[in-house]
Length: 90
Image (cartoon, rainbow, N blue to C red; front, side, top):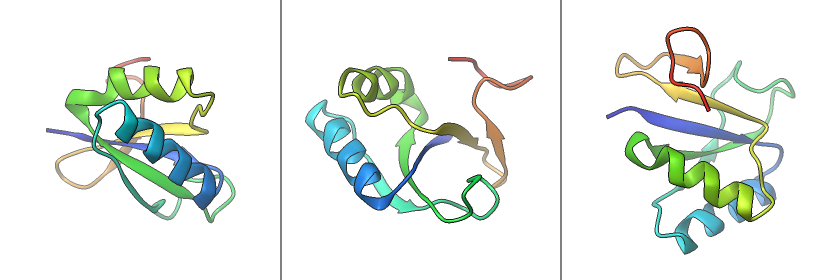
């Protein structure tokens, strides 16, 4: 199963996002965003299982916490933007 990374602008924003997801019954892990995925260079992300991505995006939208960007982590460890060519779209 693929993991999705919800890129957040700060650690506080990532923690709020994870709390909103946990309240919706979705497991979420806050971590540093991998290098190169954030335009600011230093940000945090929330990792969500691919089977929960639709519910996760709805939960963070309802909580007023939309992610800056969303990436898919492939099984080989690479990343691609969610909604890019060849990737599922929002």
